[in-house]
Amino acid sequence: ATQFPAAPVMASAFNDTIVVSTSSQAGQYFRVEQLQAGQTYRFTSSGSQDYLTIRDATSNVVVGQGTAVVDYVAGAGVQAVNVHINLISPPCGTEAVNRTTKMVCSSCTATPAGVGVGTASPVAALDVAGEIRLGNVTRTPSAGMVRWNAASQDFEGYNGSDWLSLTKSRPAAGTWGEYPAPASVNESGQVTSGDGLAQDLFGYSVSTHGDYTIIGAPYANIGAAADRGAAYVFFRNGNAWLQQAKLVAADGAANDNFGIAVSINGNYAIIGAPYDNTTGIQQGSAYIFMRSGTTWTQQAKITASDMGAYYSFGGSVSINGDYVVVGSAGADGAGLTQGAAYVFVRSGSTWSQQAKLTASDGLTEDYFGVSVAISGNYAIIGANGDDVGANVDQGSAYIFMRNGSSWAQQAKVVGSSAGGADAFGTSVAMDGDYAIVGAPWNDVGGNADQGAAYVFLRNGTNWAQQARLLAADGATDDFFGYSASIQGNYALVGSHKDNIGAISDQGSAYLFNRNGSTWAQQLKITASDGTTSDELGLSVSIGSQYAVIAAYAKDQPGVINQGAVYFIRKH
Image (tube, rainbow, N blue to C red; front, top):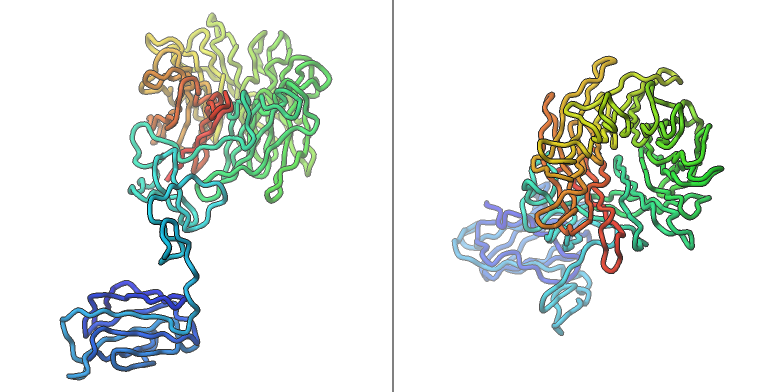
């Protein structure tokens, strides 16, 4: 016998009639699943001479039979049956004539009353006679939800882990961005602060790790304290990012600019407040928060052991495991604003300074510490004001290695094709044996300040340049490389002054992929709702599954420069 329909029929928990098929034929059978023990199910056929035989789908034992109309009380343990249709004469006869088969749980309760919109006789839980307008998700999603994603201009359904397009085919595994994936992809999602105001600059700094992303809003007003600053933690649920916490310094004050730099790793986050007047004007500080469940609590406030006025400690921060590194680009050394960076280590709930890092050849206005990153036993520190030979403000970066509790300079790196005022070292990032350094004012051909980024690879104690990254469509004053991030085989570089068509300073970011020792541009990323002076790409961060790009100057409806952050998903 042939099963028809091929798909099983699901028994209803109510006494509504289910039409199995209008084209059933004698000689076929249909399968019914999700029967409830003790309930009576009635099976009917429009063929008056049809003989229905009901068999346990597992044991094939006959549990009911009769002509045209058969009632069956589901036994314990019988959750699925096969209902066979045959002619009475001849026995088990077949007939290629369509008939209608139905089933109903006659002992079940009545179907709950439906809600009708535009109809007085709803035939479903929700019956709408007209159009339905859907919006985006406003709460934690659950399987079966549908939404309108304004960012991707698409209807989507939630399958319990991801929002999937209801109209387009899914991208291939390993690709980034949404449907379809052209050279310039749109974002998978966008977030803003739940209580954002004008001039917050939400997205001035971003950092992502695993299912968590932290976003700085250094000009947020906290109560009456202007520009005190805040940071927001977002948690990924499926492919939706939901705000979990708003972090503020316990002793914060006006003009601290808490959130100008952020970094997150595991259950810990660090936020810089470089203009905190701790014991001196704009001496600076940094705050470490720890997560327990869904709660984030300030664990420590750290400052430099030799802090001074205008040191701007906390202007850059990075955390990895039990170690943090904090930049203090305004610190004085042998010369004014030579700069320094400080390493702290955690023991239990205590964070203690382990080392002060300075450049072996540091001089006045090097701004060593303008950018920092740490990965494992290595740290990289940018000095974008370093004069290299006769090239004023060419910039450089220094790599330090930890041995036990001691840190020593292992290398100084500069970029090829570098020149004066390149500001190499404005951004740095590190992952394992790879480091990336941005030079946003690097001239490319005849394009002044187009910008570049350089990838370095460690071999033993040697760090050698592996690639110079450039935007395929780079132009004058793009400032490509002002922000940079690296993870695995991918590098993400921001170009926040990029003009998109006629839209000036809309901004963009570029995703590069490594194959062997070759780096190639894979995507240019722009915002679907980008506008003038959004400056998308001022800050970027890349994780294993998501790239995060901020438009810190984006206006929200009626709110100037509130800021927004965009997420790009890897499939």
